[in-house]
Length: 73
Image 1: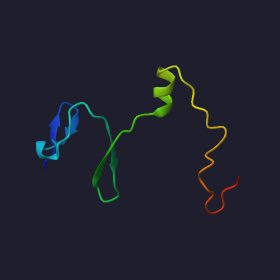
Image 2 (image 1 turned 135 degrees about the vertical axis):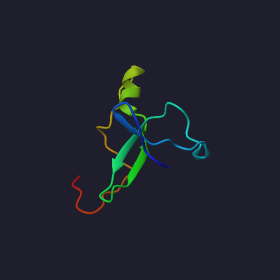
Image 3 (image 1 turned 180 degrees about the vertical axis):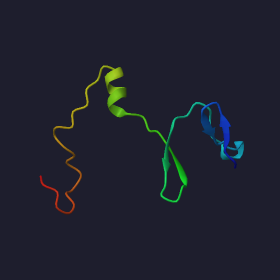
Image 4 (image 1 turned 60 degrees about the vertical axis):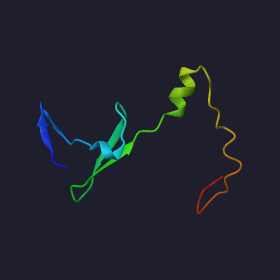
């Protein structure tokens, strides 16, 4: 793949063989060695709950998860 300029942006075209759908949001992370990693954005469960008029209550914690290391209960 080769970069190209489009307006004020540098663009990398993703080949269709990767099977990436249109209009999918990704985070781009540039590594120390100038590598670029694209990470698909996940849905925000808090935004989804708010949009549905629901409330997420995590005040009871996660009883099935055991503390690891120096976690304080």
